[in-house]
Image (cartoon, rainbow, N blue to C red; front, side, top):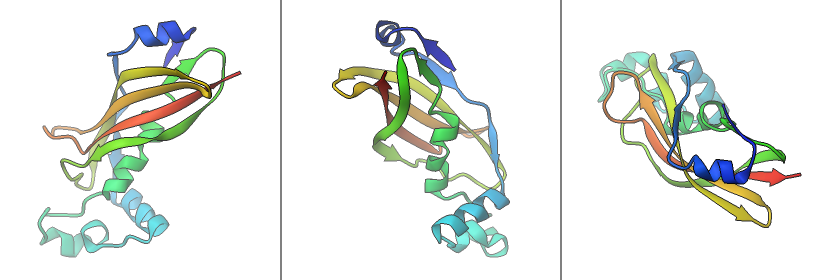
Length: 150
């Protein structure tokens, strides 16, 4: 986690990139996500049928991959003087490549914008969800966080 003592120091870090640890997307995680979202499409939850399908096996839901942003990318910035950081939203989300079951993914975050607002400091990062040993990313999104000053 990058810790900044001032907004000026945070602004000076624009362009810096940081990668999370790799995590494995196994069938159990996919099934739990399907249960939580009621999205039980066979390409995600039926390994036998999916083996004969277009991906050669089950794949993670795109929204499952996206839901990992808080764990893998958010909270990677600490700014002194803030009382909390909240998810402000996402811009331009894309899913260029499916995530096959048992793949490992990680988030690579690049700080792209820091804005001082009446509510606090709004920070925009481009987050790329990489798949180990795959050239195309699983997802790319602009993630916006709001750090509320104390």
